[in-house]
Image 1 (cartoon, rainbow, N blue to C red):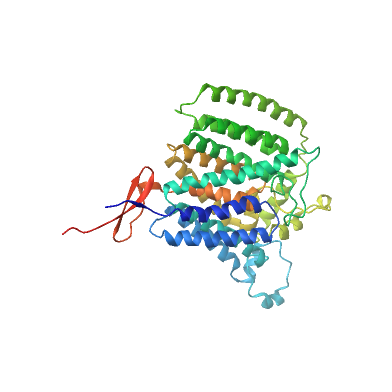
Image 2: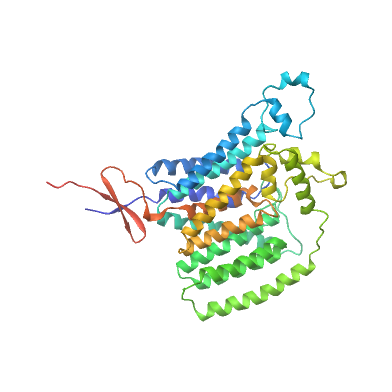
Length: 440
């Protein structure tokens, strides 16, 4: 009897779209060619991995959640009675009753093409999530270095940009300007950096490389300060502190790591305080005004919303004339309010179900340092989404999905039914295939 491990091809298949997203997925506009190519590669690679591992089940809670959310997209795209849309969507023009016969087939989505774009994005991430959860235990862990490589590439690009006297933008290389690393948006660049910190803690401690961990965290925090995003600075400081508290429990670390961590926390704390004091807060404008206007749109279009991806279409109808400038508001800068505006009661139900499932799974996996790290990263993306829209960026979307895949991976405890003629054993953290031979 021989033990033959499965091929590592699946790991590399998923690493390719992950790295593509981290390097090419920093834009925020819809319809970017870089996003389209990355999504096509991701769907192809994920489909191959899923088909090669059909015997490995995914978490039932996650599966039915994805099915229900997909059903919500379908509901928005189906033609329904125009009377229903007129009675629930205050944004629609006032159509006389005698003209309603011309509008017998309306959709809940004000713009079907925009909703289709969001649906394709969601389905791409869903395929990627399912593929990650079907990998072997060792292959899932092996995706983390690819993620960290993508982050390091962005850190290097950001450090080069910030080394100039002013912030340097790179134009002409991508279909959008690179203002921070490979991102057009500094806040989203900062989001990628700070969510990588707990992942780096879990990975470098697992492979026993504390010096690399110190170097990585120092570089990440310094780049966050240089980027100038107040949310990034604050969340970066908080997530680094929580990573130390939650991931160093019962872990044997050297005195060098303790001293370096304390010194870094002190210096960074002073820098954070200086950054906060220099920040100007305008409560009557900006995100507060966006939230107030979006909430008005939510109430006026309850319970079905205006269709995913239609924020730009619906928001101007509720915007004050004094808030209209040369640049328009493309997002609510609060993903939860924007989802409620676009998806109504179905989006609210999906958000509630997601938080319940996430909390449930996190409680189940608290004993694992890697799962604690991924839970921290997921939670802080969700926290950042209160004041921004990081998940609308492909790079953050794929990173977030990778973390969810790691968190919901079922591991060796329930590997699924092996194919006929084979048995599976867990050897040194790796699942190996054992050919079964009959005895006479």
